[in-house]
Image (tube, rainbow, N blue to C red):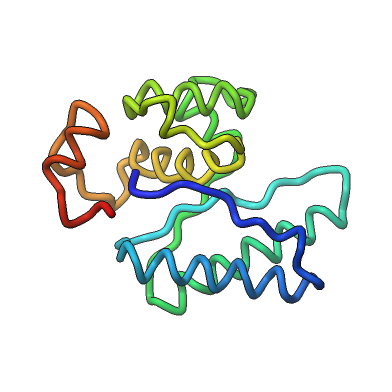
Amino acid sequence: MLAMGVIHLEKLPSHGAKLRRIFERTLGLIDEFHPEEVALEAPFFGKNVQSMLKLGRAQGVAMAAAVYRDLPIFEYAPRKIKQSITGTGTASKEQVAQMLKSILKLRQEDMPKHLDATDGLAAALCHYFQGNTVKAGKTYSGWDSFVKNNPGKVK
């Protein structure tokens, strides 16, 4: 994990402005960290159609940013992500966050205060567990060990 956070959109004036911010921030993260591929949570079906449409559009602009940089995209269903991280597809956000903390040996101060921030990290780790094209590299005993051995990759 090199970065984790949320994009605050509540103060933006329109849905279009919110989509633009998602696109620009995703593109910025791609340009900053140079990933080889992108893992995303696939759209899910809920009872509120308007919420599903907005979420689908948000996912679409994040995908567009990856496509714009010629990155392959991998999508995982929310249940698949939860199951790969916690062992159950019905886990809560709190359970997913605690398992990420444990698996990645993160310190409490490295954990975000907004649990939505762990969703992206969970999708990335799920992708790694699926053994797709992510290349396994060195293993580290924790975040401090990674930082020590990769001084140019962490700001």
